[in-house]
Length: 338
Ligand code: COA
Image (cartoon, rainbow, N blue to C red):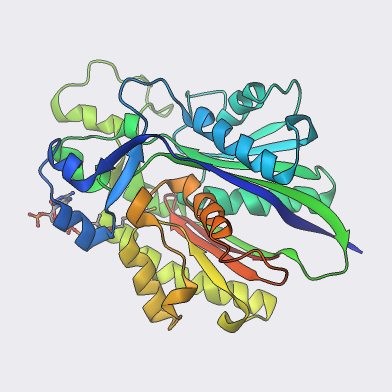
């Protein structure tokens, strides 16, 4: 018998402050029409203004829900994997902060810094840890508080309108079985040549003065995420089909074996381009970016939790594919069977 990594419970946390596209027009020169046409996004949720809430706080709420569905107590977790690009503080990692908020004393915690593919890297890592025997019950969290770090002026509008806050958590467990279930295959990639196309520069250890104090005028924008939108878009629509073919070649599967695809929610147009190029039935692709914007490491686990809540998936034998592309560049895919 072989160890298989199965999902025991999922949860999500969405902050309470609803921000519509029209709300953004009060902060910057943009329009509901521009945002919907280019990205499909209608609204997103941000942490309420003035509230002290980091990625680990949203992660905690999502974790409690996932733990409850799994029937686990925090003490049952033997490893925490936390994916975020918006950690509570520069260091230590949000996984450590979440660990103590869960009331745990020595459970190991690992942060994953892979942005939009953070959840894919986390799930593949959890699967490898489980198969190697290093851990058996793993809490995976993807959480982001983007809103405190966005340039909400017209200067930053190309990026600011895209991102939402949120968290998703998934409890996974190793089980001994001959059945072909659980994580069936993972494929991960990175190409650091694309780093400049989507990044937040500061604070930067590579500078003699990491904090770059005394920045003036537009220099302050170095603290905000910057993006070459067209480069990201074009590379994403090339890499997503490529990685789909790669994981199908690895598993001997085809699109007919997949019941539902969970693409990372970066831009509805990217996912539609992928769907049309691959000639995939629209109903086979789960999108919810319209409601949440891009929640980066949280987007796939939030989508998974929603699809399970809606009973779209979860029956024995249901097979799903996670796929994503993002900053790094990084991209990848995981196929999972219930
Ligand atoms: N509201 C209104 N106008 C905006 C705007 C906003 N929020 N953001 C940019 N614009 C303007 C630009 O200034 C530009 O104006 P100009 O023609 O006068 O110079 C115009 O809209 C077109 O900008 P452009 O960047 O060419 O638009 P685009 O068609 O490439 O769409 C994105 C921009 C960001 C929607 C698109 O490139 C994209 O989605 N890229 C991928 C982003 C992504 O997925 N990021 C996350 C990856 S994980």
